[in-house]
Amino acid sequence: MKQFSVKIEVKLKPVVLDPQGKAVLNALSGLGFNGVSDARVGKIVELTMEGESAEEVSRKADEMCRKLLSNPVIEDSSVEVVEK
Image 1 (tube, rainbow, N blue to C red):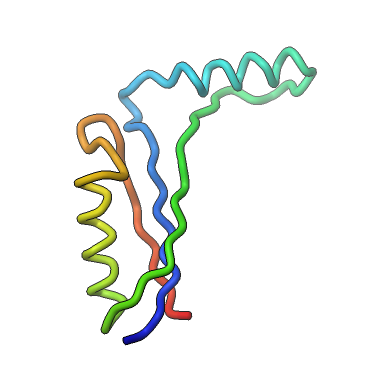
Image 2: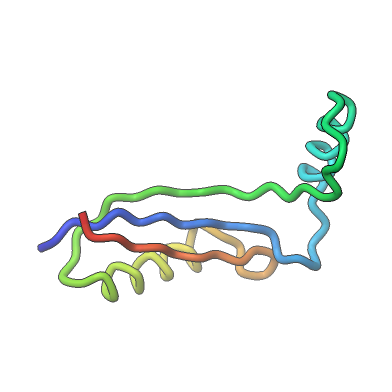
């Protein structure tokens, strides 16, 4: 078995309102950081996984996203796999 670093990025779909992003945008403006026109907040999950291949690990990580790590109705996820 090989070890892989897995980085999963979860973001709200573009059509979904992001109240946390709006709060960040307003706070940045209030702190004098001008020129920022939009902010969206997501999450990153980093895992170390074992598997036979990067493809196998990527499939498992996609399944994890569908079952636990993201809400596919309102969120998009992407998976990046790198062998250690």
